[in-house]
Each structure stands twice: as structure tokens, then as C-alpha cells.
Amino acid sequence: MTEKILILDFGSQYTQLIARAVREANVYCEIIPYHKPVVADPALKGIILSGSPFSVNEPNAPTVDIAALHAQYPVLGVCYGAQLTAKQFGGDVAKSNKREYGRALMQKAQSDQLIDDITQNSQVWMSHSDSVLRLPEGFEVLATTESIPYAAFKKVGAGNALYGVQFHPEVYHSTEGKKLIRNFLVNTCGCSQDWTPAHFITDTVADLKKQIGDRKVIMALSGGVDSTVAATLIHRAIGDRLFGIFVDNGVLRKDEFQQVLDIYKSIGLNVKGVDAKDLFYKELAGKTDPEAKRKTIGKLFIDVFQEESKKVEGIGLLGQGTIYPDVIESVSVHGPSVTIKSHHNVGGLPDTMHLELVEPLRFLFKDEVRRVGAELGIPSDLLQRHPFPGPGLAIRILGEITPEKVALLQEADYRYIKGLKDFNLYDQVWQAGTILLPVKSVGVMGDERTYEFTVALRAVTSVDGMTADWAHLPYDFLAHISNEIINNVRGINRVVYDISSKPPATIEWE
Ligand code: XMP
Image (tube, rainbow, N blue to C red; front, side):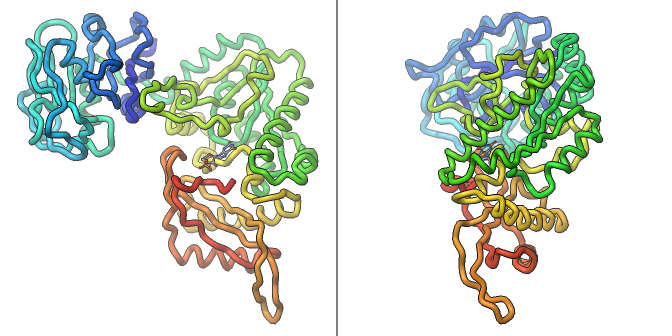
């Protein structure tokens, strides 16, 4: 039985960070919208109430019955969660004239297992306009800051613990916040911190065996981290009854099709490579609109995959590399806390195939997928790969796609990515790629005038791709790559570097 913490989401932008902090402490947790009933479960060890953009005094403020939860489980309220606790138990919460945003220093007011190992004057991160002005009867202050009297508090007396913290322990700038969360999990809830990649693998493989039985699973592989780790787990459970399909859509990176197939082979996966390049080029011919290109590639991919799956008799299930951020139900308050771009997921397959889904990574964050992958022995080259869009180079060739342009871009991109690796810069950027611009410009090589294409180099730093900054790559490196490309790739005589952040630009150019 895996011990579990539930996080009730009131719509804070930081809710996922709470979940990641809990998982980092090797305790399993799930996020549910605040209005979902908490189902009684012997594995449930405690509850965390998230922050929220609301004020507890607004008429439509989201709410739960905290006394009822607390009767059964230890509870920690964070920011809005703390204010809601204070209010429901009879304290006063109001807009104070001292709003607090950003850094503050926490002064401990008494000894408690939640904060004992946190240093006096530890930095905490505040983001609130309401404050608890009076604690309810039977509550005690644990810590203050210069501007607020109740930075942390608890209910006294027998029974389950009930804590409130006004700051956000889950964010990076609360320097000892992770310790506080760990204290809640271990000291208060008694969690044993045994949720590790190794345990995840053992449990998941057992669950997969149960779900799949003696049936067969088909799965589309992309060469990316998620689908590879998911497939490896399923393979552990059912061996070669997993049929993987990897499609060459003609817009992969240079040599990628063969390299990825080789890696799959080395892992022992049963994967069929399908060369469908010509089909994709034929359908893409003449298409210049980015969305039209995406739709064409998406539809053809489904066609090819379905054709291939018909060749395997008796398929019962469809494997998918879905991860937790794709499935967390977001709480819609002032706009959802997580915006999912539907076009960014390999869409379409589940709807058209009518097969039962197998999604072993459904509850993992991306960094956890990588850790599980490492534990499974998947080569780190593959685990550390940059994200690569489903429509591949098609959205990095602006305008019409031809096999010749693909070959040209592949050559330039190959030199750029190899250079990033050779200069130890690859792991410092979140994503990098090369874009072929639809313009020709004049150059001179030797005594000859050239009239050739331009490529733009793109490299960004980011956490999740939702916002990104352009990577400040060293000039020497950029100079080296520019020479490499122009001297070696016939057809390109100019290289530029993209210095736009997202927003307002996007990572891809189309
Ligand atoms: P943008 O360009 O929206 O990209 O800033 C954010 C992230 O999403 C990837 N991306 C895609 N991935 N299909 C995908 O599978 C797509 O159509 C697509 N468009 C963008 C992009 O590479 C970046 O990681």
C-alpha cells in the first residue's frame, strides 16, 4: 500500500510545486480540485490545502469543510489554505494595510516539530493581500515576520495536527520551505518516505501485469523520454506482447530514425520502424500554413499507425506516455492554473482507436519520469534529450516543405546540436533547434557570389516550455557554429541567432 498525501487545489499557480516538494521527500501525493470529495482511504496520511487567487472574504470564494477533514487527517493550510482555516475556526482574516509580496524573514515564536530544525530568520516567500488579524480560540502562533503577526500557527489540543502557514514553503525562494514540508510529512503525518523510483517500478510493473493480463498492447513511440520510459515499463510487465511502432515521417532530425531504433533495440523493446517519408512528403507538398502542416502530419500519423496496428492480431490495449501535468484537473478560478496546449500532445489516437488505455506515467512529473528511466537503465543520452515537437522539422521549415529543404536543415541542425554537446552547452539549455527561413540572401565565397538560404539558431532556457528566455550562448560558440554551417552546408550562406523570449515570441517559429 503506497502512503499518500492529498493536495486540495484552490487554484494557486504554485499547487504543482507543492506536489513536487512532497514527491521530492519520497512521499506520493495527488492533486485534486478542492470541490472533489476526499474519499476515505487507509493509505491517506494527510492533507495540504493550497493557495488561491481568491480572498476568503469574497462571496464566491472556494471552500471546504476543514473541521471535517481535520477530524480524520492531519492538515496543513498554505496561504489561502491557512486563511480559510483561521476564518472557519472563528478567527479574523481581512485585507491588511500591510500587503506582503516577496521576501520576508520568519521569526520563530515557539518550539514545534514543524519548524524546530529551521533556522531563526529563515527567508520565506510571501504573496498575499489578506492577513490573519486574529487567531481563532484554541490556536497558537508558531512564527511571525516583520509585517505580520501570524506567519505560521497551529491548533492546540489532542487529535490530528492542524497547521497554517501564511507564506509559500513550496517555492524556491522559501529557502527552508522544503524542510517544513518534510517535517509535516514525516513528523506530523508519519510518512515513511519510501516512494522511490525503484518502488514505483516494482508497484507499476505489478499493476500493469494485473491490468493487461495476457492481452497485447500497441504503442506509438516517438524517440522522446515519456514514450520510451512508458514502453520500457510495459515491456517489463509483458515482454514482447508490447508492439511498439516508430514512424519516420520524413521530418525527424538527421539519422534520428536509425539511432532511436538502435536504442530501442539495446533496451530490448519490440519496436517496428516504419518508413513513411514519401507519404508524408507527398501530402505536405504545397502546404505552407503552419496549422495545415500540423493537421496533415497528425492525420497521416494516425493513418499509418492504424494501418500498422491492423497487422498485429488481437490487440487489446493502447499504451501512452501521458504524464501528470497533462491530466491534473485544473481549478478554474481567475483562469486555470495550468494551461495545456492540446496541439502539443500526440492527439487523436485514443479517440480513434477505441482501445483501453495503458498509461503507466499518468501520475509522474517529467523529472520523475527521467529518474524512473535512469533506474530502468535507459541510456542518459535519451533521457536528457531536449523536447522535440511532434511535427518535427516541418514547423522549422517556414513555408513549403520539400525533401531538399529537409536535408538542408538536417545538415545545419546536426552541426548545431553536435556543437552544443561538444561545448558542454546541451544540458544547459532546455531546447535548441535550427530554423530554415524562406529567404535567400547574397553572400560571397572565394570569388563567387552566392545567393542562398539563411538559418536561425534557437536555444531557450525554461522549466516547462510555457515561458522561456533565449539562452545567452557564448559568442565564441556562436561564431564557431556559424562557420561550421556556412563552410560545410552547401545552400546556406547566413546564420542568425534568435534573441526573443516567450512571451511575446514562442519557442518554435511556426
Ligand atoms: P511554442 O512554440 O508554443 O512551443 O512556444 C512550446 C513547446 O511545445 C513544442 N511544440 C509542439 N509539440 N506538437 C508537439 O508535439 C506541436 O505541434 C508543437 N508545437 C510546439 C515546442 O517544441 C516547445 O517544446
